Length: 479
Image 1 (cartoon, rainbow, N blue to C red):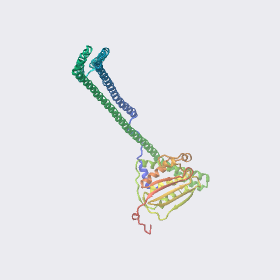
Image 2: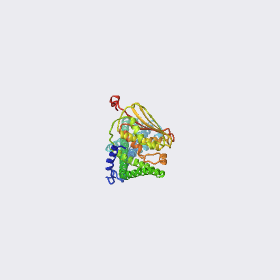
Image 3: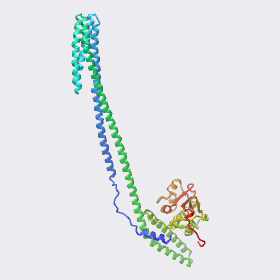
Image 4: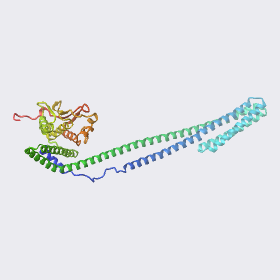
């Protein structure tokens, strides 16, 4: 790593401190219970109103049945009995048989008794002033008609049919017509009352449905807001916890750098001494110490870089550079690590300059090379390429390692993600490719991975846009 990258890392690491004890989250652990209580209270209030509306509707329906439906039935019976009274009288007028005249007279009186009783019952149940007024008029008109009818029947029984017909035409018909109009008016009154009550029931039903729909919408809205706030708070809490973990790990990692540097120095001195002493066993042990110290130093650097990313402390220092220089520098730093593999290069000549931070891009590309060497068997081929593809310069690394499943390929680049087979065979933190992705994104590029499947190898590519020819830097003969 260059002095500039190390200096930036040291600056960011110096400010690391675990942030335990910060203000609590917006929602307390009792928020769910409070929300449920709120919903229960809201639903209870709605149920109360709905029950009240249902009771009102039931009362209206019962009232409509008692006062209107039964009333209409009574009026129908009154109309039938009144017509029966009238018909029996007319039958008595049309016969000369004295026995039939007596029979018809008795039938008329039986029918008029039912009408008189029905009118009395109507008056007892009448509540509205209009009903009482109409009932009194009907009672008076009926009594007047009965008086005329009795005169007609008396004349019939005395044998004066002609006088009976004349009296009936003069008095009976007009009076009965008045009774008929009273009964029809009473029927219309019941119809109006039934229509009014039916309208009330319909209004209550509409109001109940409106309330239910409103409460349902409000409940869904409140639940959605609550879930959104809860999820947001949960994500914030998770990020706070992750940040605390990252800060703590970075702080510890920063403290480990000094003793690690001492270990690396001691391993270097020990390796040189072993070479001088021609002690192969000691040389091998010194190499193991140096390799493990390098691996530990790389993990520590990943943790520090991850903390820089999480705290948005990546500030690219871009400059014009040739892509070949990034590839060569990254491979040169990893020469010993790649010596166990069959490395092949496929770099186009005359690639356009790219305007990037060379330190960040080299570190990202180097991480991809490290992964290829780590996850592929010794002796397997690794192909490093640098090509131009449309408006991008593509730096890619292909290995013949364990490959990726479709699900692993979708999750590749997530923080702390490692495939099950990768984690079982090799050690690692799962931060390398995530850091590489952040570094490349900070320079306006993107990382893509492609794998044919498990044990089919993997190709990881960095796509970096290059500028138009007019903005490319001029390269002199001495450059």
